[in-house]
Amino acid sequence: MEKVIKDIIYNYVDKYMENPDIVSRWKKPLIAFADAKDPLFSKLKEVANPNHLLPEDILEGANSAITYFLPFVESIPTSNNVGRNSSVEWAKAYIETNKLIASLNDYLIKAIKEMGYMAAKLEPSLNMDYEKLTSVWSNRHVAYVAGLGRFGLNNMLITENGCCGRLGNIVTNIELKPTKRPENEYCLYKYDGSCKICVDRCVNDALFIDDFNRHKCFEICEENHEIHNSLGGEAQVCGKCLVDLPCSFTNPVK
Image (cartoon, rainbow, N blue to C red; front, side, top):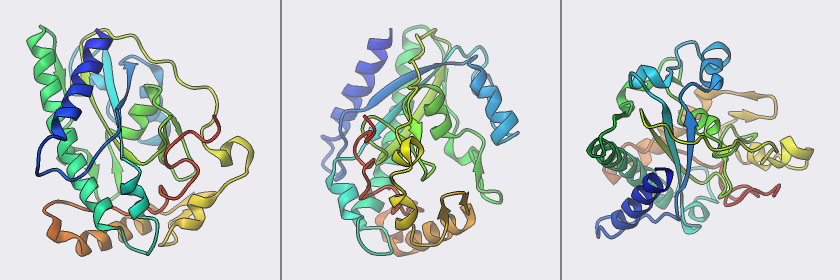
């Protein structure tokens, strides 16, 4: 069943890029599975956010979470290397990838139901607390639980294909074999202290080695949204702490 799920995702992304209205491009998705009863989900509520949901809050009887990473082709992050504000290509990719994730999730849920199982997703509109700037279903943390990668100093998930891309997930009652979580760090700073480029690249004094100001981060995202509001979607994005890094496109420790 794991291969069936992966093939559905691979094929959908390939087909999606045939749409002539889509200008962004993605590499082959990375896919991982988590046990819905993994104790790390409960630990998120205890340590990170008491309002964080459990898989069973999204789907009663959930057995697994299906997570995936959609890596951007190199030209998209590279376009965002210079300047204070996000490039048009980066902002457009953010908008188009969000649409892809929403569409892919709906398609995957439909396919799973046609196989006789159940699946569900959390609507993005229900996820974000804009006062506290926290989410009740963190795509990054769900992906971490599923073994897609490790967190970097920039608070982003570094996968085997780096951190430049977008994460999506759904939950299902299918019992899928959990992906083994990596044991070693993927972030060079966390591995041996040899890198903190992401901190130096932050353009709005939001990221530090020992601190993160999420309100300053959101401030620059809002600034970019105003600049790119003609692109036809929500572009509350920055990405400067993800691009032009050793971990932008790969796991640099490996």
